[in-house]
View (spheres, rainbow, N blue to C red):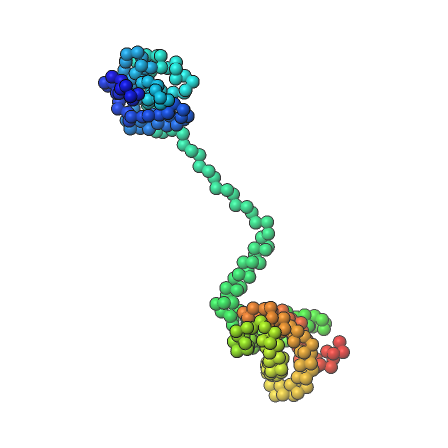
Length: 305
């Protein structure tokens, strides 16, 4: 029997469906979704409607107050609902709703990664990141390596400018000085300056001037003496170290003041503490060219050339 409230009572032999109150104004897709939900409750079986008085239209319920209680007609297109409503219910058989036949949404492919248009830039960035990571982990070793290349390139440039046969032993002596002395000792010296000379404001003008003055008035004469002694010793003439210092120290310091005060003003103002040795080795390529010539040929011939 039909309920007078507009709901659908289940005839005998008809599978039980959940009570549905579906607005007639809802879209067909929303209504069809409700029918599929009811079909799933019965394992996807077909819902064959038995005969009912007045056909499917009288069995399906009533339209009242803008709401439609039609679980069966919900699966049909709205354009054919009126025609189906007049047909006998026994002639309408719904095919089983097989889960495998349900449309499966297509998987979206992930967007393709854009190819980097600047591989050389990435290679340099990766090299710089690895250099800084290794510098933070092993500062003395990395600074010694940079001094090795700085002195080697400087001496090769000096010998090329001078002409004549290339002397690999001379380059080896200078690179040994860079690895054993300039890198590790320079690291300790600049770390000491940064630690003890106005560490609370290391970039102020007073701190920069004080560091530059200490470097040029104390460190430059001392390390120049170390340089000449080291080179003469590797040449097999340690006894000549003192005479070399007496003859070469003054012209060396004079040439030093033509280059390094300005270089260190830039160094202490703009270069981070951990990068000082790297910066100095770039400048030192020019300076090593001069020192290598001075140590091997004497300052007089160097000034004439």
